[in-house]
Image 1 (cartoon, helix red, strand yellow):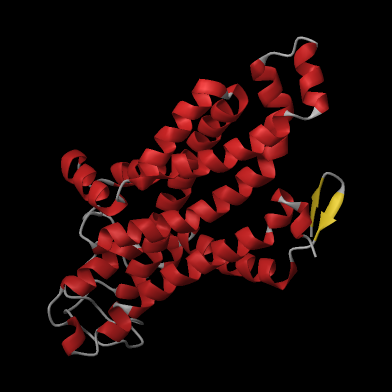
Image 2 (tube, rainbow, N blue to C red):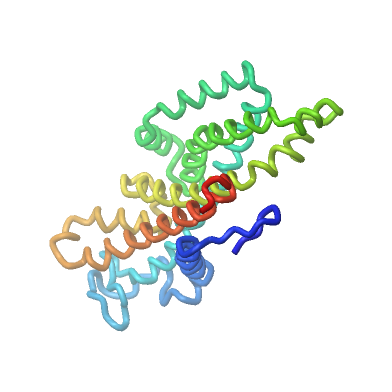
Length: 280
């Protein structure tokens, strides 16, 4: 149960399911050194060993323990998702608050820029930017977060425009409240639930986008994210000619799906904070 503005908001079964899923993967990420039997780059045995008591998910084409790779991959994938979400939502909040508060030409200019940016084909641009700037983890995070700013900014802008016409905010401005004071004291606390919901949803989207980029070969080849595990598995020509796909392709795919579902369910469960009208 969560308290917000003196009201108790129940997460319900959906919210608690999401928390259990995400807590499990966060535990894997934080305790990777303890839980992973082998290092992320450690060649432990021959390639394509079937799952056994020693190697729970067998080994890949280079003799890495896939179970250990999954545990280390949880850290990389969650780190990418959280960092990209923090940058993207922060930029979107600034973008949307400036457009919504000042309005007029500033609003029209920023919203037309948002329209143009969102109409561009994302995947070809991702490939072009990654090819030019390099496909390091830092660049992947920046690419994902930059493309999230216009979409989140438009959502924030709509809420700010709605709040701007409230009498108490107009009164605060008439009594000498500066733009920075109004945004900090009145606007930001009101949009905070919306920001938090956008942040939760953005983490799952960022993890999925990183996995998609890695699948296309744009990810950081030195990282051990779930997306890169999938990339190497699907790149190997004989993966589907043997039973290796059941322990090399399916586990990281399930991890990505579960984490994205967890963040999606948590975002839905917390929508009561952003819009009390959705409360049952």
